[in-house]
Image (cartoon, rainbow, N blue to C red):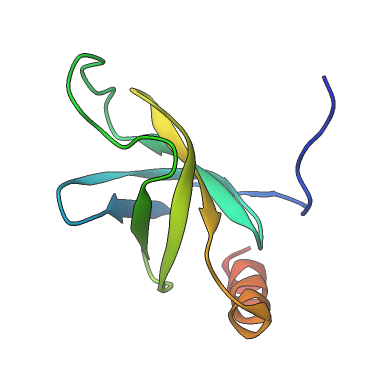
Length: 102
């Protein structure tokens, strides 16, 4: 399978909360880069219940870091993949935060 990621990923186990106006789910960061992250929910969700869907806007609240906005690119009952919605300045700031977290 062809690699589609455009940034290097860092594997961390930090806490993160993904929320929008209707729902909020907590979990751990599986991996993160300057362009997005993958998170695993604290417990699997009921697949028949509504949860985030591809394209949904979300706010990500990081444990001991910051809050960023993004969009869901993959969602299932186990977790999410998010692409960040930020400019070059905030991307550089995030890269610095990721490096500090390591």
